[in-house]
Figure 1: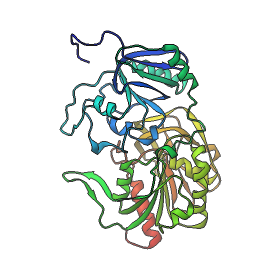
Figure 2: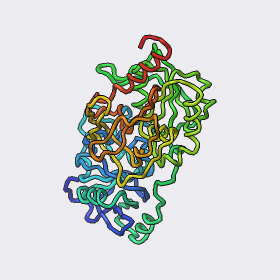
Figure 3: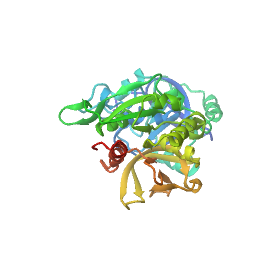
Figure 4: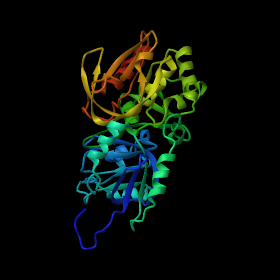
Length: 391
């Protein structure tokens, strides 16, 4: 924030942790209070995509990179209709946007969408606390007059139930089915439409990001998106060449209560290829008999090295997950294909002898920038092989 004569002389925002720790700063965006789990994201770009990623439901995001907001916002970078993350924590207050694509400053964009943010926080200290103690429960408040009931904020943080056992996919999934044909952005035309699809794909929406759907369309798919609660009959009514399981938020075991039976039916009663990402990866693992676990602070960033065990290749990936598949519980016939080089956690699986696989990371997010896009092409090739059609 620039120093001016009318600059606030007292903090206008407060972040209270359940252990009683307090972080004061300057508020921007919406006013009020929100409670959530706190995570940190190490990406240097893509703050708008992060805030609108449905996988961040129930979380306040701390950005470790200090220059957040300096390119403004625009409608093309939204991953869903409105921000899903509960709030934002940054080191420096956003400066005036300087980018040819800017439509609205970050603070105004957040305020219009009811999301609270706090700037001027020691994000290095906060990130260390998250790494050492695990993702804490927090209350984030913004009051332009700087009046805070600290005891009430700490109490609210302590009473937050957390994300374990919570099905958040129902909160972020689509209300009804729809078609998607927009493809990946390309210079100089921007987003174009898929007019000659080769494969019919049903995408089950547990909190799908738009760019995942674009990648499917760019790989030659006619995409029909169904709600998270879709049944086996709902899926097969579209006679798909392949089934895609999307990313999403919350505890996979809770979402799996209704999602896993559908996936098992598809696996048991058909031979269509299946591909999952993030929560979809965890849903597939559960359907195959594995288990998931809550991570200490999860993986959130665009610089995560993942090794492909089949090829030995190391991919730089985008990650966003607080739960993981427990590789020790993978049943016979299910192979671990990818592992995190940060902590060795599972990042991919496949069925032996079947075109069924999934990954924990986000191949559509382009951190490499194209390291993992082959997964979409592999999905298209599997559908082409099944139908004996040209890939």
